[in-house]
Length: 250
Image (cartoon, rainbow, N blue to C red; front, side, top):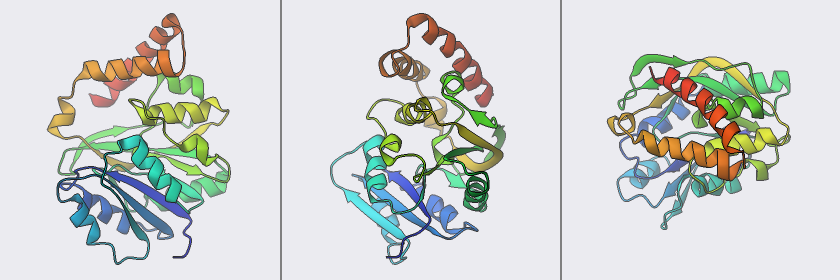
């Protein structure tokens, strides 16, 4: 297998309802120098069968795990297998606009950027836009990110010649993706935003009615136990986080 410039890592756990469309959104990219790494996380539905329909393509790899990994370890498993200079993540139920990779790779090359992310748009569980676009800032530092969790997993891209792969590995904690962006930014990197909605973020009825108390506990745990912030500063950051979170979902 020849090495590709971009490695796309997709953790898949019982995503049979969505994974076909997600893969198709990658195959529809205007940029084609990529490898798609599908990590099956002990799925018990049709996910693996659907993924294997694409196994004859030389730029698609399927990694099977019969024991549950969880999102963090599944992504790390894909990261260990990745061969591309640029690494990005895509959740198994999200969709990319056809020009996503072309725009993002071009931007990172032209501006010599280590870490980038893009805007995104909310969609229903059928992948249909609900006309709610999330705008992103031009730059995101660690301090700003503590108060604004706008960086969305399916929009990020890293240049592994600039960001060590070890920093991209996700800790096995709740909200592991946010914890990862923080650990990278805390190391001195700046994330640069492309203010275009290049990803569709599916929200199912289950997602929409998810336990908000759980989300609050997760972010609070990141502040206090992962980042080691004091209670006053944690509360200060959380107020801004909550305002941004509510604003994104209105």
